Amino acid sequence: MKDETAELSDQEKHDAAVELLKELKKKLYSDDITTARLAAHKLSWMQEDGLAMLRAALFGSHPRAVKKAAAYGLRSTKGRMKKLASEVLEEGLERRNPTTKAACEKALFLMKGGVPEKSRSNSKSNSNRIRIGEMRNKDRARRRFTERRTSSGG
Image 1: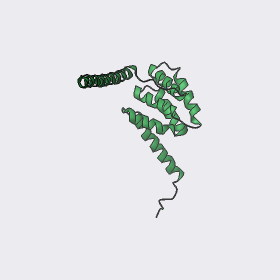
Image 2 (image 1 turned 120 degrees about the vertical axis):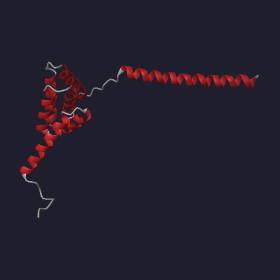
Image 3 (image 1 turned 90 degrees about the horizontal axis):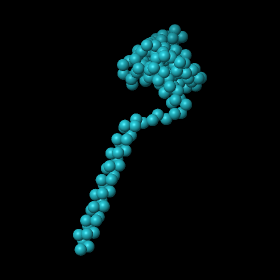
Image 4 (image 1 turned 45 degrees about the vertical axis):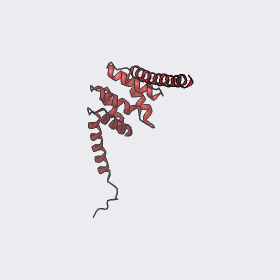
């Protein structure tokens, strides 16, 4: 009878790692950007194997979502792989593919501590709505106050 707490053999560990990499690769090339980003984040923790998969996804002829997810995974690497990941992103700046170049530019910008801009149309419309609402309330309060003064004072 085999004890469940017993350690796995090296071959079993290797097989499990290969199976996990296959599953993450499948998810990385998914059409769903959320699934692809989660897979890229998990690959960012997998040292050389993860770096190789993310690099292949970024430089291959894949859809925009896959490239953006790969760039996300590369920028979220930690430890000794961070320097290698930034070198891969810098290499992407040299590529001809505009999607690859844009994904690498943004990832490097964010890695260096840049703060992404909010979309201008979105921030303008929200701020206008708030200002208009505040002005309307102020005018109502002012009218009520002046109506009370004139009606009770006379």
